[in-house]
Amino acid sequence: MIIGVPKEIKNNENRVALTPAGVAELIKNGHKVYVQETAGTGSGFADEAYLAVGAQMLPTIEQVYAIAEMIIKVKEPIEPEYNLIRKGQILYTYFHFASCEPLLKAMMEREAVCLAYETVELDDHSLPLLVPMSEVAGRMSIQEGAKYLEKTYGGYGVLLGGVAGVPPAKVLIIGGGIVGTEAAKMAAGLGADTTIMDVNLKRLRYLDDIMPANVKTMMSNEYNIREMVQTHDVIIGAVLIPGAKAPKLVTRDMLCSMRPGTVLVDVAVDQGGCFETTKPTTHDAPTYVIDDVIHYSVANMPGAVPRTSTLALTNATLPYAIQLANKGWQKACKDSVPLKKGLNVVAGEIVYPGVAEAFDMAL
Ligand code: NAD
Image (tube, rainbow, N blue to C red; front, side, top):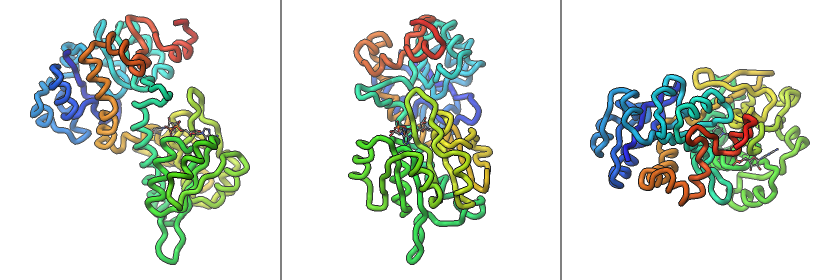
């Protein structure tokens, strides 16, 4: 199959859909890979690295779309790309159709075959192509929390791990899924006194078993949250209710009970946020302050570390890309239920129930 990797053109997107290692694997499987010049630069992969494994470099995005049977991307196509997409062309990327009707309409009109990373689903209902970004965001949340806790950033001025004779900072993590678990590992590793809250007792039992001694678990409810936010230095929002907006667990009135310089990191901002005062921010201006409490709520946290994020994402996406290239999308989706769940739009029709429901359409 002929595979194309365009350079991402969405603002501030530095990830790339294939690393040189991925290109090498696809070529080993008998495929041709065309990469747009400088597509990998933002993630630290020079054109020469792609050339060295046998990729062909093309100067323009138009040429990549024109030649490829399958386009592999990171972010959904944006408007300037719509008209480049050809009938029957496979697009394997994040789409998040439910939140962008013009994108959905464009893909239907172009009659592309859209395989969405975010809906590829394993038998246990986990989402293997979303997990890597949650891992990155979870780990990063503690890095950011520690940074904004510094006095120069307006924080309370405590060191996460403390030192001999001085107690460590206290970190509260609300939601003990992928993001929460990775955050807890980082906080604990830095020596912080860490608590994870969740509503799922089975999950809390598991976390209690595997976490180090400086991580405690606690049932998440309004009473406990209200108590805990008064004494914690960094509070991470990491809840998810699949298919729904995040519940507002830390309310506006709780802010005045917090110490000035407390840092809130709302990773769940992409689902509306789990703090009542959350509003989305960007890497250019990541924080704002309400009642002396610092809010960090960047909707695309992995974008700050594109090298790590590209490697993490492509580790997960490549095996499916190889299946698609080796078998063609029809046979690959017939043979793999997880991959079939990734199909969202085919030949002008919506084929994924969640997307149809989002727009009140019948399948
Ligand atoms: P997950 O499904 O693995 O975990 C969510 C956890 O929240 C579950 O354990 C669930 O039991 C728990 N939960 C649900 N309701 C709760 C409540 N009332 N109190 C406490 N816990 C509750 O999800 P995840 O992969 O960890 O993702 C968490 C959030 O982070 C999602 O909203 C996701 O979209 C977001 N995310 C954001 C970024 C970013 O850049 N900002 C990146 C990746 C993920």
